Figure 1 (cartoon, rainbow, N blue to C red):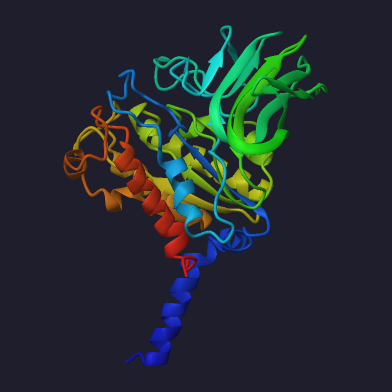
Figure 2 (cartoon, rainbow, N blue to C red):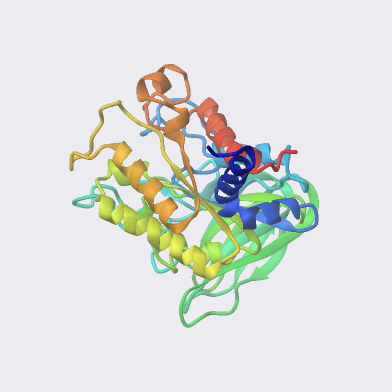
Amino acid sequence: MINTLALLLLAGMAAGQQTDWAKGWIDAFRNSKTAPVHVVVLSDSTAHVDQTNGVGYGPEKRVNLWPNQLLTALGATAPGRSNGTGLLTLEANAGRFDTDVWHISEPYTFNSSIGPFQPNIGRGGTIPANGGTVRLNPHVEASLSGQTGDSLWIYWASCPDSAAFTVEVDGVSAGSFGGDSSSACVAKRTRVFHGSLGDHKATVKAGSGNAYLYAAEWQTVQAGIAVDNLAVGGATTTFYNSSDKLAFVHAIPNVGLVIIALGINDFAHDLSLDAYRQGLSTIIEDLHKSSPKTSILVVSQYQVLSDTMRNPSGLSQSQYSELARQTAEHYKVGYLDLGDAWKSFSIVNQSGVLTSDKVHPSDAGGQQIARQIERVIVDELGLSH
C-alpha cells in the first residue's frame, strides 16, 4: 500500500512536470513589474480586424480577437499589468489588407525571404499569396489607423535594396529610419516615436528606395506585458517553419512566452500530417535554439464546420490535435486543447461563440479562448495569487 507521504511526493512530482515547460514564463511574469515582457502569438487570428465585409467571415463585427483579449486579461493579474494594442501586422487575408488598420497608397508586393509568408496554400495553389513582409516602392505611403499609446515601434527589414523611410505621427515628423541596407534582409524592431499618451495616427513613407514593413505596435509603458500578435490570416505551420520566417520573433526582446495556435488551416488546406508535424517541430526547435529561456505553449484548435468534417485526404481535426499533443509532449512544452473546452461543433455552434461562417470565433468566442489560455498560463501555474 502506498502511504500518504508517497502520494504527496508523487503529486509533487506530477505538479513539477506540469510546470517545467513554463519556468521561463513564470520568471518573466513575476518580473514584469520592472521589465517589459512579451508574449508572442503565432496564429491565424489577426489583430484589431473589423471583418464586416462578409468575405469568408460572416457579417459579425470581430474587432477584439483573442490575442488582444488575452492582453486585457493579463492586465488584471500581471504584476506590471499589460500594455500596448497588440501587434498590428501588415498581413493580408487572401491578398487584401485589413483596411481598417492600414491604408496603402499604391499596390504592394511581398518579400517572401523574411517573415511569415506562404505563396499558396494546399494543392494547386488555390489561395493567393498571403502574409509576410510588405515592400513599399519609393515614395509609397502606409497609413495606420488611430491607436492608443505613447510609444510606436515599427517592425521592418533592412534589405539590399532598402533605403530610409520616414514616420509621421499626428501629421508631425517623427524622423527618418532604416537608412542602412544589408547584404541579406535582417529583421529590425525600432522605436520611432515616444510622446504623450493618447490616440495617435501614424504614416510610414518610403523614401528614394524601397521600404520593407512587417508591422507596427503601440505601447503605453516600458514595463508590463505586451502581446505581440504575429498572426497571418489563413496561416498554416508552413508560414513559420524556418528561422527566416521567425525572424521578427527573434527581433523582440525579453520574450517570456510564445503561443503556437495553428492547425485549423493545416487541416482545412489539406496539409499532410507529416507536414504538420514537421512544421510544428521546426518552429519549436528554432525557438529553443534562439530563445532557450522562452516558454512555449502549443494550442490545438477547436472543431469547425461539423463534427464529422474531414479534409480531402480523409483526415479529421482530431488527428491533427492528437499530433499536436504528441509533438508538444516530445519537446516537453506546454499544451492546451481547445477541444477540451469546446467539446463538439454542435455545442459550439449553438452557443454563439462562432460567427455565421461556422469557423471564426465571435467576440464571445474570442473571450472564451483568451480565458482558456489565461487559465493555463496564469491560474494553473499559481500566478494568480
